[in-house]
Image (cartoon, rainbow, N blue to C red):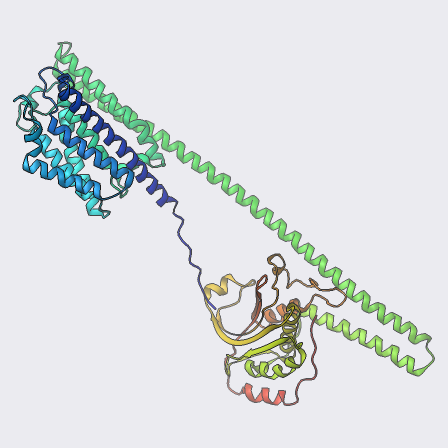
Length: 570
């Protein structure tokens, strides 16, 4: 009977990470296509149609040679195809092809034959393409080690490209006199930056680069201030370099200005970050306060609804009691008036008998109300549940209609409990009677007994009021009738609630059963599917044998006389 419901953890955070990866892939494809467009334009127009200015930007600068342009087109196309299709074959095949072309020198030999001697593929270009190829081969893998390898390859080659771009930006001629950066052109360095950023963004495992696409306040600050800070530093550095080169101030003063500008940019960025984070925290605090106010309002509304429902229930109970007792008093008074006027002794006895019968029905009504409210005095005695249900089976088979089949399955063995014998019989009979009325045509009523253990978690949460955890015996009455609608199911144990004709039903049957179970230390559980039948289960605490108590002998002796009669609670 004890169970736990399993649910899936809300995946908002995971969906956000997945969306960040998807945005990174889309941007990766766009950056790759930009690099392909630049390399293709230089290859076609710069070398094909002789516009060499496109390949070298400035006279005397190194040019982007055809073999380098071809490798850019291959790697860029592979990254763009991977971003669109997510297929592993494109980056792996391209990475292997680049390694073959670089290792064999086929690209250089086939395309750079007519290139001037001062141009060619530099050592930095070869190193960057080797790292790009290794990153492409590792890109499809989803493991943490593969993602780290891709990031290391991209960042390592990006560092070399950034040094070259800064060398051109600040006119550091000595840099290109070294063997590492000689023959490295500015278009080559810019295309590498585009493709290295694309390779970083193509990693399908969320990493630090995807913070740029997240929705948190930190990511918003990153998107807002990072481009401005980077662009501003570059522009200020160019101005300092220009002033020092034209004699406006010394190189040492230019370095001091660069240092001062870095401090200003860092300080301004920190203040702006603090302000934005404080605003985000303030919005969160206001949202929490608003939520707290709404929760307080909801709690007050629920309390008001509970009071209204309680008042409505009390009114329904009072109305039902008043109606039933008024009918009983009318019968009693009418018979007493007739008794006072009657002369025939036989009529007097008949009127007196009818008045006494009405008082007995009033007593029964009072007992049902006491049972519902848990105030009835129970005559609890040790009972073996299976023997009691087997004892009732013969009566129930005679009572149920011919179109209904009764099935009894006993499973509690010789376990026993403490309960009122008469009320237990009345409760079982009442449940069977309700099941018979729920079956329209041929149907089946199943009575099952058994034992279970209610765990602590279930005992604290359901039913209401909570029941201490422990061992329980249960009686289950199940039918395959029309079932109970959900909006009615929660009301069936309310006193005087009935879907039958009020002239034939008092509406106290299930409320009496519910009160009897609760007063006996157990609980009642009702489950129903509209069109699929109803299952009503009474749970009673299992009794522990004590010295001097022999429930089997007591029950055998008590049941030897047989039942006094069959009474059905309405």
